[in-house]
Image (cartoon, rainbow, N blue to C red):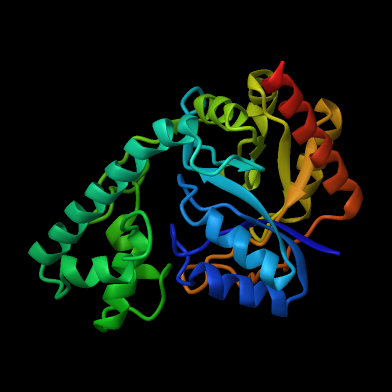
Length: 289
């Protein structure tokens, strides 16, 4: 059985529609697929209905673009089995979506002022089925207009690099205030979901696991396109130490990706999924009591 617990659609930053993502997943023989768009549950009802028709068990999810303010690094939190449209998720994520969209408008304006021949109308059309414009949509417009040949190439870093102690931020970079990871964990639980620390190897979130578990974290993503064997080993050790679920998924973004992953390219086994379902049931019982 192929179980992919991390996948996006064009409701956030995937170039493919929900229907197209499910068609690809079906072709890849995926039997269980979590739709985990960034900071939104838009489209989950449609995904559930299409999944039923196509024989794919859709797990309603979300990926919250959060931040670990104690350690000063990003920390994405997946929510699996969430209730679509739950007020706790909307209250937390709506301001984030709006801020990201407005930042993208300002970034586009900066690029136009710098001489790049793109328009906000063109960028917006590329994101018209989602919850707002992402940097990937801006890069897509730049590619269409001949400025680059890939999303995450040298131009992306030149324009959007966040900056560090050695290098200044990119030409068009606009900072966005990310959500607190602890708040994300709490909101997911209130929405009936299982909070999972996404791709901890990408942002080096391993040291935060004890604190996140204390806040209600119930799982850690082990299998991910950006994880190497060492990352997987660390994640498994932490999962066993704190008795939390081990998950995995393709983190599919279609054209807007820097990996070659497709739905089902990262999967977990039945036993790991069974433990995840136990966590879901425990959260459901605690919310009803």
